[in-house]
Image (cartoon, rainbow, N blue to C red; front, side, top):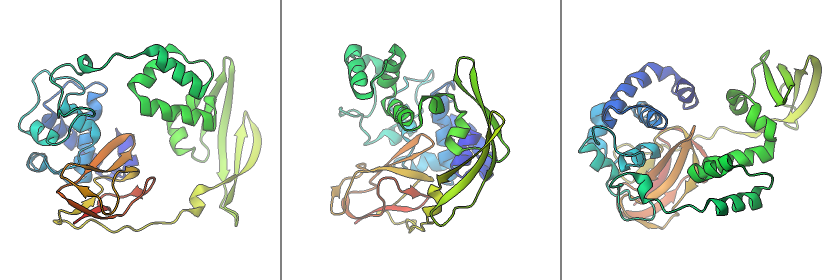
Length: 314
């Protein structure tokens, strides 16, 4: 969770994140914390810190806050019913107007798995084989059924970077790269490991290329690679105005996954506007009131900071 907080820009607020974790746990009903319920509590805690919310604020503003999707789905019953039930009236406030996909209901009435349609595993395996080729294992089929978006992203990364890079690189190095003088061991196959040590990363030249010096199994190597950050520029975005209901801002530092409205669209309170994602914490930003979309300020792939203006509703 500390690593996730760092990626969300909350490293300096770590002590507050830990305190908010206790508050988030109470808000969820003091639940047993195992994956994925522990993620729900952690997502809520970081959401509270990022938005400066107290436990009382969450209770008071629950009907208008754009909670992380994991939190909304928890209160809808996606993980089942907690031992002591859901805390009310908080639950009713959070799920109000948020229906479960393909239904008119805002929550499951019992065990969510009991309401799922049967799965044709053979058909899923055939589809995966046709799209991705190779040998599709039973565990791949189950991963695709349970976590379709995550599994699809994993396969895309395997195609882009290679199987060994995705499966064998340490997670932190895969996400953030290596530090100077850092040494890691990458298993390639049974009995074959690659020892990689980063020596130096140069400055971008006029073409945006950097020279990278490293050691591979003790031998010095040098390559030149494109530095994507060399072309990036800092974008200063307009902030959503506090107290103006039609100004819809980002609840956390994140990336725009999908915009679901255009200028001129008529929306009702609770309609989805934008999907944000930060370290696998997805948030569905919804309309705070009925009205007409005056302007959409972001597009898919944009990086936004907490409070950045996303949409204005007249």
